[in-house]
Image (cartoon, rainbow, N blue to C red; front, side, top):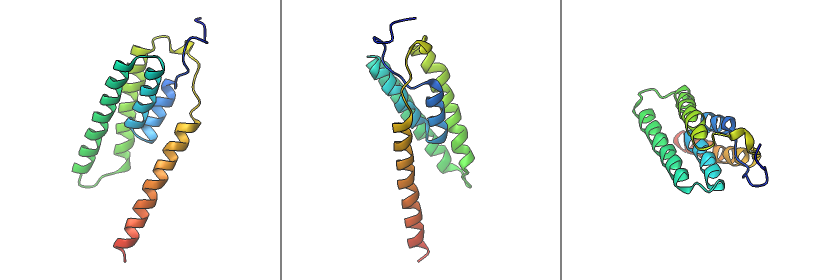
Length: 132
């Protein structure tokens, strides 16, 4: 095992997958981006971030084209994007992931819940104006 003091702490592939499913592929991509920046792999970090942004935009466009959008579509899209991030990119850039210490997910979880709460607030607020 390598010396833990020389290796940065990273978010686990399970955390990246979970955040991708429950928040968005963009959120999971940002966690992996932070891992790569911590490991001084900036070029790879921008590739992952770009991939996450493009996949999120595609998800939004396809979701907008649906006549009757359902939240299930978002979860499936997040699962597929998260699997790509967790099971393709993480092993590619961190083949020895088990040797890294894991970062706590509490701060990203709080940020994700806060962002979600703001969106829910605005959805409720805008709906109350439509109903008069």
